[in-house]
Every structure is written in structure tokens, then in C-alpha cells.
Image (tube, one colour):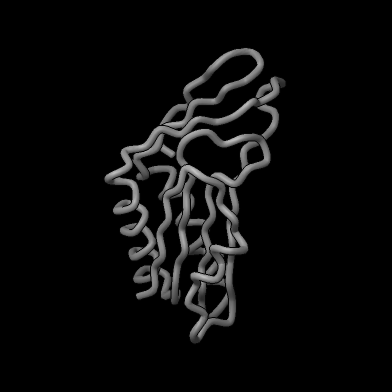
Length: 139
């Protein structure tokens, strides 16, 4: 099982992270990259601030990555998430899925981001020109 997990308070480079995917036997790499929007509800976003249970976050990300491999029959997963302050246009999360066929890769990638948002011990505060707002839920 090929899983690579990264949690970082610095920038994430999706292209650099792609090199961690195990492509042996793969015919497809499916990628999801989540970015900080520059506008929300008509107000400019200055930044997002992510608070995390840093000791648990890598474990949770690894568990959902491993579950996706067994559930979807994919070959490998790279999953990375920022913590700390993330500016507009910056990468928040990056998921790469290596699979034999694209159908399983797309299904797994979609499931992974949904599960990350449900399970990852992350909390997000949006700093906008009109105030500060904690976003509901995990992820």
C-alpha cells in the first residue's frame, strides 16, 4: 500500500507532491487541489487560518488514504494539507490518486476530499475585509 501524507505550515506545491505517487501499474493519476478563494459572500478574503489537532491530523489522513485504497482498488495516494495562515490563491489541500483506471481514481479522489472534510481535526477561520468568521464543521 503506497500512502504519503504531509501536513505543513508552509506552501504546498502540487507538482512536487506528485513525485511521491507510486505509479507502478497505474494508467491514471487523478488530482484535486483546493485553493483559498479571494472572495466570499461579496467580501474580499484576506486569508484563512487553519487550526489543527496536529498530533492526530496525519493519522486521520493516513487512515482515510488507506481506506480509499482498499475500498476503491486504487494503487497509491498522496494527501497533503496546510495548517496556519493560507492566503488567497494559495493551495490548502492536495490529493493525488494513482490508479489502474480513471473511473476508480476519480471516485476515490472525490471520496477522499469528502472524508477529509468530515473526519480531519481541522478548523478554519476566514479573515475577510468585513470581519472574522469560523467556518462550521471539520475540514
